[in-house]
Length: 299
Image 1 (tube, rainbow, N blue to C red):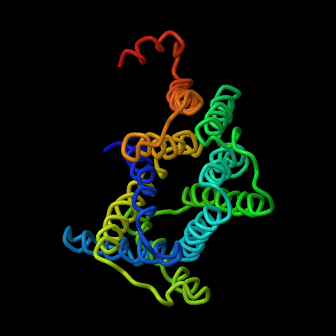
Image 2: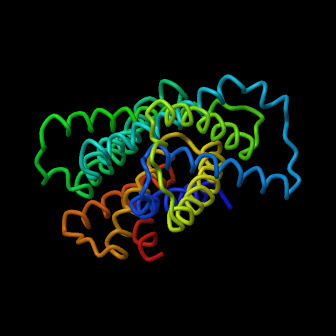
């Protein structure tokens, strides 16, 4: 599986996560903790069954960076869940998906990647599309809670962008090693968070919750983050930023198809802008890419 297919699959997996989380009757901190722990156990079992060799030297060499990345990952989950608590999902999502813009803007400084005008326009077009998809333009603010939610959403976006950029600096570690290390550290941080916020008090877990948490941990955490971390090592940060918008588009499409939530003209236009700009941004660097657009559309 090539890197672009991996990140596309990861984004589709992440985009379907909301359908599960929405039906788990547990505090957000607890959900995040359990998904991280199940993800670690799943990856460890898979790794052992495949008899993968772990490089202690590589893990120690990247120890500080992997620890920072794990803390950043846990912060990303916490901030995003808090954003959902204080504002609408649409507004929180729009705030959160400023992350690709941050990645695109910082990649020339942090990673020395060349940022062309055309690539920048594609990212901005995706952001505009996200504004249409989220519905934030047509829904009025509800007071201070919305601003608090936006603040958490932007904090989640900063942590997500940091995760993408900093992962480019890991060296000599396999995708499994990097994923296990980051999920492990994130689980420890989330355990402390849940303990301090007392999210574990008076919790009742049903069979449905156990089933959904298992899927969330195995597919949406273990497999999803393995695909994500293994792909970003082989892709430019700006490419990762562009593909990130597949996540919210997937969420909107699934909510329409499965939950029968209405998708109006604005949402459809936004999805077209996002997916179209993502496709074009990956073809811009090829000679004669304009002439190839009709062929690309037929495919």
